[in-house]
Picture 1: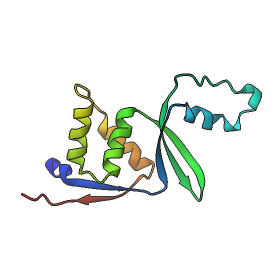
Picture 2: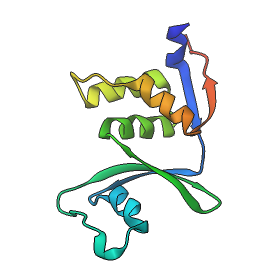
Picture 3: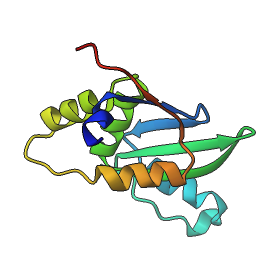
Picture 4: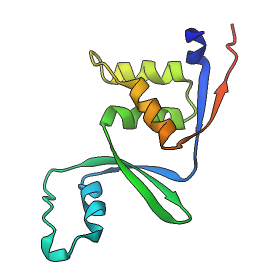
Length: 123
């Protein structure tokens, strides 16, 4: 039932990290294979929030996240129930709509979700 999803907690893979930086870290990471003379990255006022995943100590991928996606992911990594996490997200960013279904589809495709745990309500 749809209302049961409010009582779900997610366990994420341990091999990924969320990074908030005042620098364009994803652009810098992507430029690692470009000859130094060809790199042109504006570093001024270009903060980025990214997700990185590692396998055997090597970065497999980096993905740019919106601030809202980052916040929801952080709430869920803190073991908050999905319903509570979404409620807090809506409080933090009022009058906004979020592509939550798209975020979850992407997270599943990236292999980030290790386990889905249904927590029985206390009522």
